[in-house]
Amino acid sequence: MPHIHLEYSDNLKDFHSQPILLGLNQALFATGHVQVATDIKSRAICQSDYLIGLGESNQAYVHVKVSLLSGRDIATKTEISNQLLLALQQLLPKQTHLTVQLCVEVLEMESAFYGKTVVVPTSAT
Image 1 (cartoon, rainbow, N blue to C red):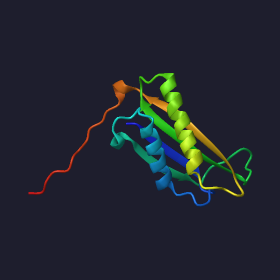
Image 2: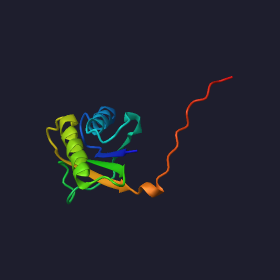
Image 3: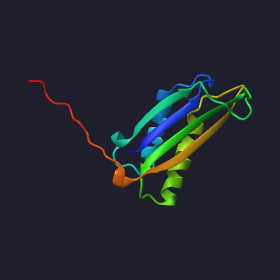
Image 4: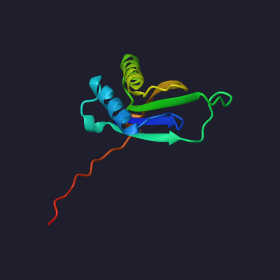
């Protein structure tokens, strides 16, 4: 916890998800609202089946959803959203022929219904 879901349109040029995910993880950790970096889990999905507006071909998007356990105040969620959006702006490769919409959405996962366990490696005998 938390989880970052990165979705982006497949028409973005030179978009490599791993450095973007790393940058988003670093930005989230730098807010101080996550105590252990390995608690952040992120993944990316390139979307090939999408529509922006009425089908204009010069449009692209990157949408970040960050899911946090419930209980954080509005100021904290706003700070996280703002910092991830700033990081996304800095990480996005320049696009010469596309207008790119960058979005960050902060979601809450109800703490009472979220389960997690960690399975550690066992030594071979």
